[in-house]
Length: 304
Ligand SMILES: NC(=O)c1ccc[n+]([C@@H]2O[C@H](COP(=O)([O-])OP(=O)(O)OC[C@H]3O[C@@H](n4cnc5c(N)ncnc54)[C@H](OP(=O)(O)O)[C@@H]3O)[C@@H](O)[C@H]2O)c1
Image (cartoon, rainbow, N blue to C red; front, side, top):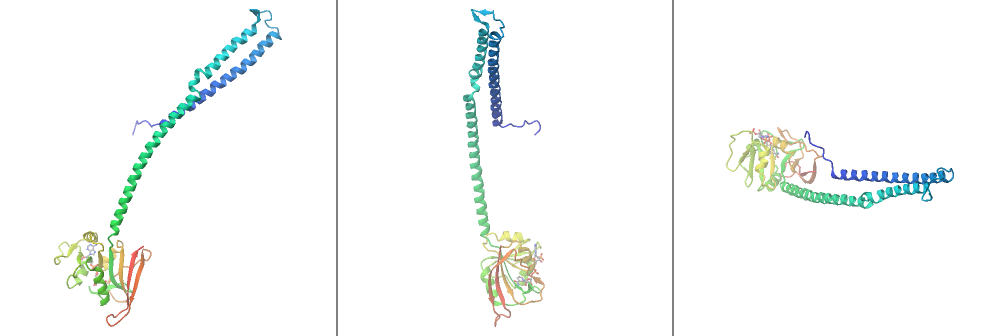
């Protein structure tokens, strides 16, 4: 927010201090070196001035040439300078730098340990959520929403609210597969039955709010509510008709389709099966015979 100071990480300050001190130290040593060189040149100059040029030849202290005293005094200052650089400022020497470095390393190790514990915490949270998601997926997987129906080659499934054909083995298969399960259907399909089918829980979808049904039949106002009403079933079935198949195709896990190998006039149709989404996993052909006027195949599709 406004006025909030930008936080400088501790490591930057410490490193900056180290760099500054290193630069200072280099400058000190450089100055000492220059001093030493000037001293050498100066000493030679004093000796030459006295002995060669004869400057102050008659001036003697304690019977000694004056330049000797001058050189000794300068040497004293030079030693004092050396002492300052290598003794007085020793606290900024290698040992001091090592101490600072150790301090930094210790701080970084503490930070690394903190990061490690945070990372461990996060990893366990991620692992827990992954396990949770997996268990959710597993739970979801335990219920297979299956579309079941019979459609002609041109996808016709019914006419005047009636089935177009009578295929006894298909009806048997329907009975066997749906037995004991929830069967979800549109209002019109429900009305096409003379009475509810035995041993199945009927869920009828209608937009009507006062739609009357026999006892035991569940009425809902949407496909979502129908699926919710069948949530405890491991395999609820969508049994039609055309409107409900169309809406359920995008959420179903499986299709059990009886493909009747002929074309028929109809007013209700099965939706087109998109083979980029669905893969055929079973195909059982059934011939035409005394009980069956048409050839047909039991096809199973599963979502890819
Ligand atoms: N060959 C097969 O396997 C097979 C299987 C089943 C049925 N069929 C045939 O298919 C035909 C019936 O199919 P259909 O398409 O005409 O009708 P349908 O799908 O059985 O029922 C349509 C009705 O369902 C309700 N409905 C649809 N979507 C809804 C939604 N989203 N929310 C609330 N209610 C919704 C409406 O009822 P309300 O009008 O009451 O609001 C609608 O009129 C019949 O000929 C039947 O024999 C064939």
